[in-house]
Length: 101
Image (cartoon, rainbow, N blue to C red; front, side, top):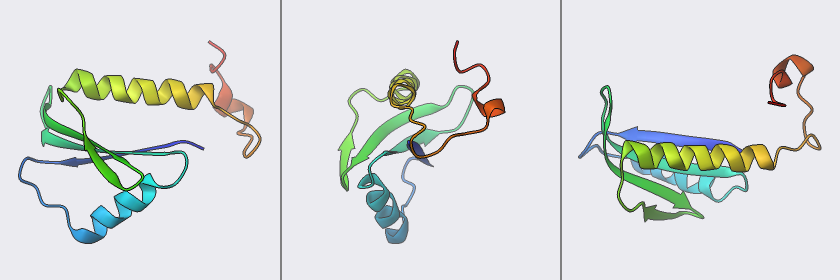
């Protein structure tokens, strides 16, 4: 399967060591995408930083913004959808309704 993990922090928010270790370990598992988004909640939210955790390494995304985050999530969704496999798990038909559109 494919898993998208989004962690949100306010500017100057602290991440405890166990949480950092957990995110880093998840990033090393095939199929996991881990993002840290730093900003202020609101409508729309303000995004100051976006970090990708890839194989336990933190990489800052250039030009962080709400649009950049939406683009990352959309790309993840397309990649997960293109790699959809029933080999591991076959969901019930009601769950698949509308996927052929």
